[in-house]
Amino acid sequence: MNLSIVIPNYNGEKIMQKNLPKVLEAVKDYKEGTVEIIIPNDPSTDKSSEVIAQFIASIKLDHVVGKTIENKNRHEGGFSKNVNRGVSLATGDILILLNTDVIPHRDFLKPLLKHFEDEAVFGVACMDESVEDEGIVLRGRGIAKWQRGFLMHHEGKLDKTNTLWVSGGSSAIRKKLWDKLKGLDPLFNPFYWEDIDLSYRALKSGYKLIFEKESKVTHEHEKGAIKTKFKNAYVKKIAYRNQFIFVWKNITQTRLMLSHLLWLPYHLLKSLKNKDFAFLMAFGLAVVLLPKILDERKRVQKGFVKKDLDIITIFRE
Image 1 (cartoon, rainbow, N blue to C red):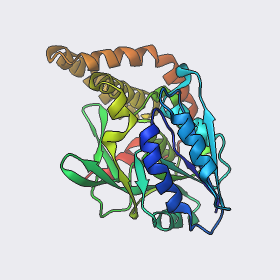
Image 2 (image 1 turned 90 degrees about the horizontal axis):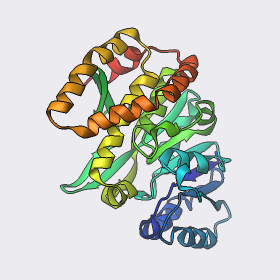
Image 3 (image 1 turned 30 degrees about the vertical axis):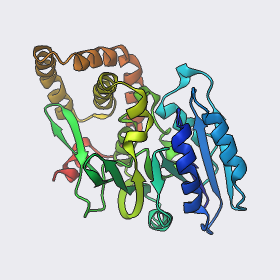
C-alpha cells in the first residue's frame, strides 16, 4: 500500500524545521510500499520555501521521496486549495493528511492503515494529543447534533470507533474516494469546516469513517498558522460563515431545512441584540456565495444515498 503524506504549509518555517524530521522518522521503517511526503506551500513571507527544499534534499531513504508545489498567487491560497494542490501530486493509495503543527508518533501507521482492508472505509481519524493551556487533551472523535437550525459539532467520547468526521490535520483517506468526492471544497477557504464537509459527504454517500485511538499524533495548536497569523474576530466570522455554507450545501432533508429557515430570524435578531456583528457579517458573506453554494448542493446530492437524520442521530451522546 503506497502512501502520500500531504502537509500544507503557510508561513511555517520554524514549525517545519522542528516537525518534518519527526514525520520522516515515523515513516522510515514502513515496508509495505512507497511513501511520498508532499508539502504544498501557500504564498509564505518567511523562509518556508528554503526549509521545504532543504528537507526534501535531506531524504536519503529508498522508499521515501519528497515533493512540493508552490502557490505564488495569494488569491489562490487557503487550506482547501492548498491541500487539493498537494493531493494533485499524490500517487499513493492512501492519503495521510497532517498539519505542520502535528507530530505523528513513530508507531502511528500500522493501526491507521489496517482499516483500509475494508473497501467501504473512506477515512480514519487519529487520536489527537492536543497541547493546550491545561496540558494534554485527548481528541480525535467527532460527534454532532442538530440544534436550533444548525449542525452543532463537538468532541465525542473516545471509547467508540465511529466518528462524524476525520480531521484535515491528522487522518488517512482512501485516495480513489477522495477523487470521487472531489476533495476539499474551496468554498470553505481560508479554513474551518472543510474536513467536516468532506466527511459528511462521504457518510451520506454510504462510506465509513473510523476513529482509531491507537494511531496517535501530538498537535501543538497554538503554533499553527491560524492561531498565529489571523485575528480572533476574523477567525470567528469565517467559522460562522462556513457553518451557513455547510447547511445550505449539504442538508437535504426537508424537516431540517425548514428548521434552519424558521430559526434563522431568531439567530439574526439575537446577534443584533448582543452586538455579535461577526455572525451578521458571516450571514452576509454566505449570502454573497449563495449561487456557488447552490451549484455545489446540486452536484453533491447526486451521490447521496443516506438521509441527514440517518447520519446525525447516530452521533447523539
